[in-house]
Length: 91
Image (cartoon, rainbow, N blue to C red; front, side):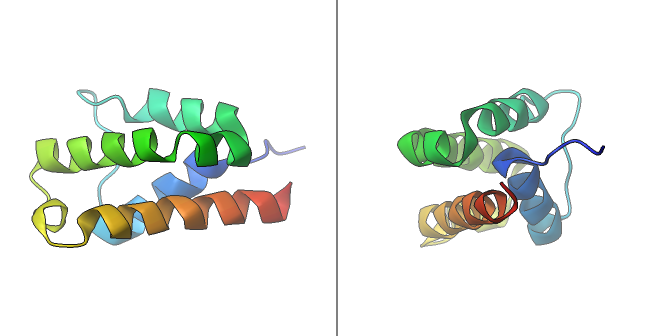
């Protein structure tokens, strides 16, 4: 039976589509994907601001122009919510 995907997996998929980058050796992305999955949808809602902060920090570290645009926080928050909703549909 295949492993159940969590909100972190769906968030990673969305970021990959958005900016075309995956985790690298120098980032904490893989561990954060695992943390987000472990928290599940409800835990992600509780820690939403923390998750958005992680993503903004990583985007700035990688020099993604989109991180500096007005509304970047809102756009990232929307990606997180979409990942949460997708994970809930498969639970």
